Image (cartoon, rainbow, N blue to C red; front, side):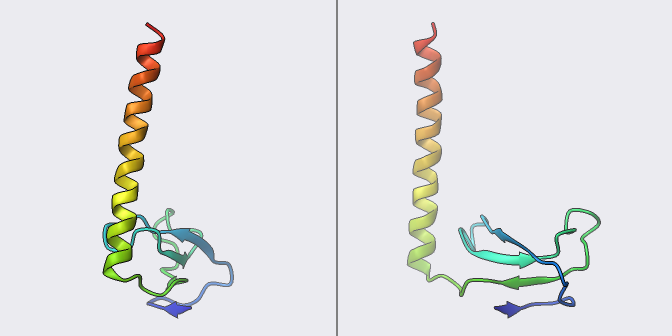
Length: 80
């Protein structure tokens, strides 16, 4: 686990980043982050993904989004 900034909290929550630079990369953070930033604790759980892995993950996420939109459209048409 790679620590970055802040003091380690005794209670850590693990989340998944969905940013363009780190899609699908897991990390630990202060469980109170959304309450005034919490204590500022942050550490990556996973090593950094390679450029190809990031590209594939982003393309798969785009495909999922397109399928979701298509599915919603088909369901609406079915109920007419």
